[in-house]
Amino acid sequence: MAKRKNNACTANTTGATVGYEAQLWQVADALRGSMDAAEYKHVVLGLIFLKYISDAFEEQYAKLEADRAQGADQEDPDEYQADNIFWVPKEAR
Image (cartoon, rainbow, N blue to C red; front, top):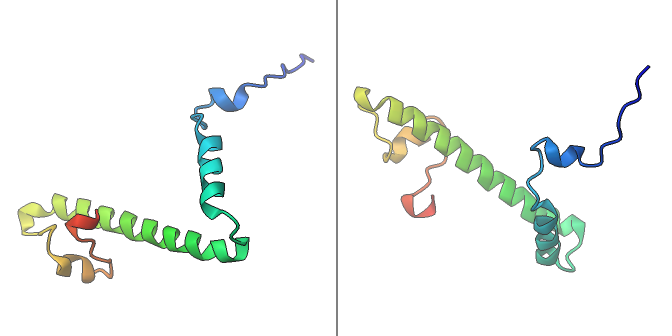
């Protein structure tokens, strides 16, 4: 049976990492400062919620853009609220 090579660079060759994860982690630690992890979860949950709102809005925006010929308006808040999606104003996108 052939032995498998031990390749220490496997994580870097898969494309899964781009090299700045450690730097982002350090920045996140600096931003967190002396805040306890139990308190930090409130910040993180808020950011996750904002990401969910953004993703849902972008998906609906793309659908409305595709349905433009049928009279859909991407800038009408009612188009989003009808599907229970938060309206994100242009300034906040």
